[in-house]
Length: 459
Ligand SMILES: *[C@@H]1O[C@H](CO)[C@@H](O)[C@H](O)[C@H]1NC(C)=O
Image (tube, rainbow, N blue to C red):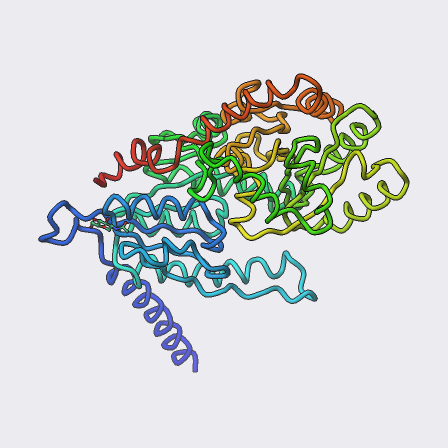
């Protein structure tokens, strides 16, 4: 009996050992570009543990690599349709990840999370070590960090692939924002991110401030690091000066039906059009804008405003009822300030930005060193901004008095609105618009090629 037990135990150990040995021995390493490729094909796996269609920056990375002749495997979830240029690009292959299991509401987060991570770990490990051919580079978006950083780091070591981490933000500061700083997972994910972040051979960041932070403890990253700022997509373009009626046409198309009556005064400029896009989450304090508009409306001499708020999110219903209450109590008189919400197709949103007078951004930055993509897009459309300025990297995008104005409180925002939309404010607004057009004129691919393209060795 005992011997039988020992035999089966030995057999088990042998089996597991054989499986592990097979796993490692069957891994092929990257050994240079395939023979015969004339200019040394650069192969890059681009990985995001998120929806490809809603990962603009990884999409732009993939498009730029492909444009300059590299071969891309773009790995991520297929929830919404990816950018059409990605789908139609002969140099990009999309590798869809299977949707992770969903948490049944009856199972607590802490019990379910390890199960989901294990599932993702097994699938990603197989994909990156066996299913896909080894590539010269693996470019991973961070966050999400778990389990991508660990698996990608391991796969790169095993396959002789160079590991690039593209830091958009930190996973642990986002987690701290949603679960609270004291949550046990926050400390754990910080440790994980700091430790595994050091596995990268090259690091890309969205700001210089983030690069500085990653050089220092607790991250202490020593490898080469490049700040590659986000740039507007091609769909965001300023109004063309050669078509003076373009603005009126756009307004007629995109203004919500409930605000049609304002169309003539919007075209004439006697009502100002303000646009804000928000995700209606706690890290964008919408009450700042609401308080500012209420205070702005209380002065009878200011220019009327139509504020169009785009976006969807958890706190939307809460604020909509607040807006309705303010309007019916007379604190937000429709003759002074009207607030409309809209969810527009992408092209209409881009057109709306180009036709608006001012963009408002309430992004507060959980890490202090990222930048709001929506302001990048506003600049692409030539729209100056008033933006919350209370974080370190703010000045890398919004230049005070050049392409926008910063504020920290509702009072400061009222002051900005009053001045820009008031008598004599037109000149300042025009100046800011020129600054926005200038900033938005710098597009992604040039910046990308001069920094990342050089390192990757694409044409
Ligand atoms: C794909 O790569 C080739 C070179 O291999 C290049 O000439 C071509 O422009 C690329 N195509 C796209 C759509 O990026």
